[in-house]
Image 1 (cartoon, helix red, strand yellow):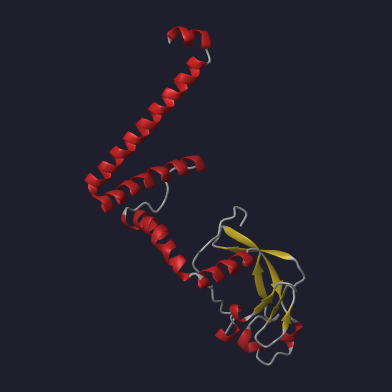
Image 2 (cartoon, one colour; image 1 turned 45 degrees about the vertical axis):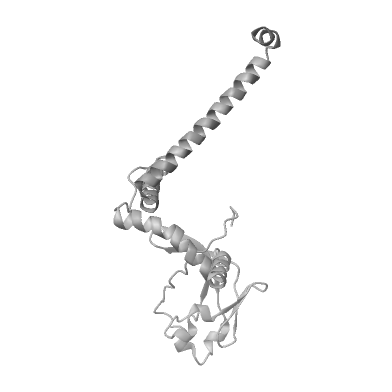
Length: 209
């Protein structure tokens, strides 16, 4: 969002906690009201938040900020045992990134063909490099070195891919054309630069002519 990048990322698999006994009361069954910043549970009860942010850890080294939503109606709800085993009642976590995730998911459902195109363009290179070539980790440390390492890997991938599509002779022909084009551009720039240098020395230029 900060870099104006529109994402089309696959739905993340929902971690089903044993604390929710039945699918009827899974998290996606709860409706969020953005304006009021509250949830409505499948039974119609309003779940509110104090607005306090909590740190929620996952994958050992990662964490995110979440707000908790709950309702006092859990105390007397007849289906509580189907909704949660938490003695304090049902609690819904909403991540600080929830809005961006939900927007991505809506785009994904509305433009499935675009996501399929993304899979063809993006997933294929990484799958080949990681699974077939075995580059499932990087060797160097530091962002600058990592960028260099990835640059070399993808340069090789692009050559291999281009050879697979065009054939060796086809790729060779196109590279020769590019080289000639770049050489012509360079010579034209050199000629222009030379003329500009000489034209700045008008007296000398007039003698030379």
